[in-house]
Image 1 (cartoon, chains in turn purple, brown):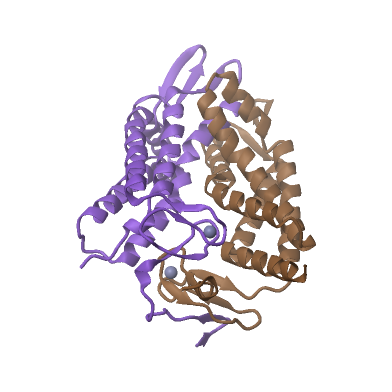
Image 2 (tube, chains in turn orange, blue):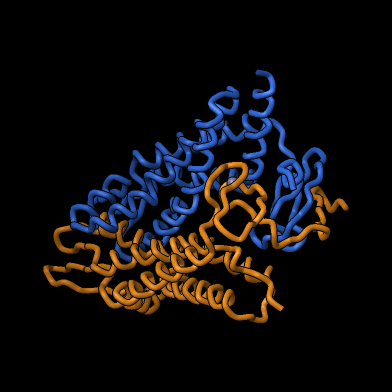
Length: 209
Length: 212
Ligand SMILES: [Zn+2]
Ligand SMILES: [Zn+2]
């Protein structure tokens, strides 16, 4: 079937779908033996034993969730104006932008810094829970959910970069911006959420009926 | 099942639906039946094109890293933003963890990925050093999650909006170079899937192996 310039190819039903797995590095198809797999093409380890990757994912996720608290409570940037120091947390910064009328930017930061991490936590927890209990969602949907989790992972770094940029540009004798302690917690939180998503074993996404 | 049989299949990266591969006509592409994600496409002069784009991107990246990105003017006092000033400021304020994370995400990883890609493509053109090419392709795949140069551009735009009311802003040459880098990055990544690259790798070295 040709539609425009593109062509669709059809799903193969004759073979056992669950026994084949895609190498995340070279995209070669490998046979899943249930345990540790080494890719036949790139010879890299695709997955640990399922229990190991499960625990890795949980450990990184918990670390990230703990870091989320100081990341929001501590100031992400400090403004020094005429020697007086103002502390700005992420939420404070968003409210400031909102009051100043920069609605699009306030929304971008609200989405990237506050919602994306929480969404990622929820998605990963949901995927982990769905491996243990049968939940009413299709395998395809859960794979898509995982894909989204991986893609939006880096967006939360926006705030850390913005703080770095502002502290370079606003460096005058009367007014100065310097990074706050929250920035460290925030950068580490993004790092650990990404690690958590990467160590998640997609083989744990199974159809259960 | 043997390897050759497994090579007839492809799994969608987004929804993990299994597809049987078919030979594509000139200028066509294969899409996932479930979610319309690009699976692979018909390539012509694959390596040459990708190499040309990567070299342009490399030059743009060097410009973006070396020159001023934006300049602000507050009551006649100018301050410029460039990559080295970012790292200097973060380390100067003793935020070593943030500094290292930012350094890797927006500087080291993007440049390592691009250099590896260029080197791998040149070696593939020469049809030599099979093992090294494989290591480079693996390195690119592993690091690609961690390159955040596109997020950095978004951050510059956000920072500019924050400064709009207080200062006059001027774009400099590195800003345009940075946009070019992102555009080329999107273009190359959208057109080329990793499975295409690995297939090309296998084709090239299978032929040269059998010649020997
Ligand atoms: Zn592989
Ligand atoms: Zn798909």
